[in-house]
Amino acid sequence: MMYGVHFTDDADGEAFRSMARCALSHAISPQELTFVVGRSPSLFAPLPAPEPGYAMTAPRAYLELLQDVICHRAEDRFPLLYDVLWRLKHGEPELLSRASDPAVSKLSSYAGAVHRDIHKMHAFVRFHRRQSGSGDLYFAWFEPQHFVLRRAAPFFVDRFASMNWIIATPDGTASWDGRELAFGPALPKPEKLEDEVLGEVWQTYYRTIFNPARVNPQMMTREMPKKYWRNLPEAALIPGLVAKAQRRIETMDDMPDVPPRFAEKIALQRKPEMAPADALAALRAEAARCRACPLHRPATQTVFGEGPVDARLVFVGEQPGDSEDIAGRPFVGPAGQVFDRALSDAGIDRAGVYVTNAVKHFKFEPRGKRRIHSKPDISEVRICGSWLTQELDLLNPDLVVALGATAAHALSGRNMAVTKTRGAELKWPDGRRGLVTVHPSFLLRLPDKGAQETEYAKFVHDLKLAAFLIGSKRESVHAKAA
Image (cartoon, rainbow, N blue to C red; front, side, top):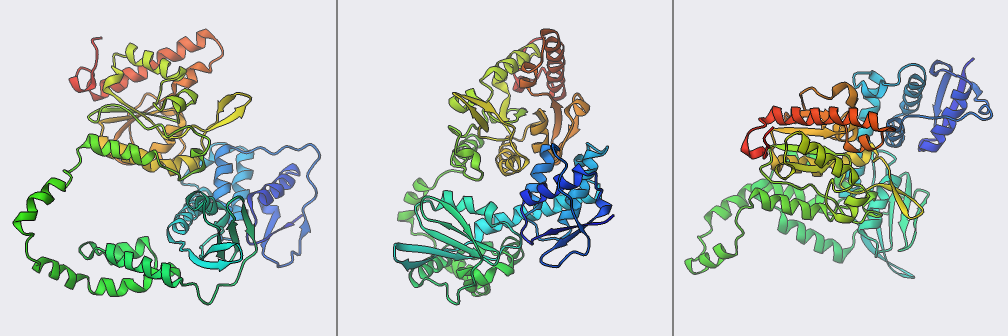
C-alpha cells in the first residue's frame, strides 16, 4: 500500500519528526511513501496515527543533520531524510559515517548550503531607518536561498539588541522589539528602502575602505555573489570602484614620499609585525568576544588554549567543563588532573605542550545548583572550528592528538570511532600528523576501579606513542627521563 505525506514548503523539524514517528511505528518503508510538497493534493492514503506507546529515537548526529537539512529548499530532502532514518533503524547504525553513501552525501551538501546561506544572511543584511509611532524602526529586506530566517535571526538579536528592527524575506519576517523575538508572515518587498542619511554615510565609508591594490573581482563575487547585490546599498559603487582601481594604484605610485620630518614619527607609531606569541594573544582576545553561537550566553567566559607557541605537540579536547569555565583555563578540573598524571607517567611535561578544546564555551544543563556537561552539537563544533584552525595555523605543531570523538570530528570533519582509530598515526585533512585517543573524562566514568586502571594504562600508552612520534627526547617537547 502506498501512503501520501504532505509537507508545506517551509515544514520544520517537528513536522518531519511527527511524520516519521507515525511511519516508523507502523514499519512503513521509504518505498511505501510518496512525499508531496506544497499545496498539491495527494492521491494516496494518509498515514495512520502512530501506534500507542511508540517512542522514536534517533542518533544525535542525525538530529543535528535534520536541523540543518530541513531548512533547505530541495523537495527531495524529505524522502532522503526518511530513507536515512529508516536505514539507521534497520541494520545500518554507522550509516552517517559513510560519506560515500549517495543519500548521506547529498544531505551533507544540503546542510553545508544552509550553513553558507545563514552566513550570507549575517553578512549581507542591511538595515534602513524608518520613523514609527514608538520611535526609530530599522527595516531590512533579504532574499535567502533557503528557509534560514529562524536559524539566522538570533544573531541579530545579539548584535542589535538595543534597536527595534524587522527583517523581511519572501518566506516570512523576524522582528525584535527590545524584549522578544517574534516571527510573522511574509511581507512584499518595499519599493524604496534607502535611508538617505545612513545610506550616504555607509557608502562614504565603503568608498573610503575600498583598497584598489587588493581588488580581485573573482574573489569578490565568490564571497559576495551578484544575486545579493540588488539589496546591498554599496553594490552600486562596486563596478565603478573596480574600473578605477588601476588608475588609483598608479596615482598612489606617483605620490611623493612622505617628508622626512614626518617619517620618524610615523615609524615610531607603526606597530611591528606581530610575533607568534602576540598573534596568539590577539586571537585569544578576539575569541573572548565570540558570539557566533548561543553557547556564549550561559557560559562564564571563553576558555582558550594554553601552552608555548613553539609546542610541537598539541592536545585537543571536547570543551571546557565546569571548573574550566570558572577558571578560564583548559584541563584544570577532575579530567584535567587525570590528564596531568597520565602525561607525567608518559614522560611528557605539560608545560611543553599546548592544550585546547574543539569548543571554547562550556555547554551544560542546570540541575539544581549543579551544571551538568552536555555534549556540543555538530553545528557548534563547526562554528567553533575556525578558532581551532587559527590556533593550529599559528602553532604549526608536528603532531595533533584528538582526545575523544568530538575532537576527532572537529579535526577530521567526519565522525570517527575512537576505539577503531586510537593507537595508529594518521593525517588530518590539513596535512598535519595526528593521533586519536580517549578523553580523560572517559576514565572517570568507568564503573569500577579495575576497568579504570586498565583503561588508564592504555591511555598512558597512547601518550607515550605521541611522545615517540615527535621524538620524546628532544628538548622542545620537555620530555622527561624515562
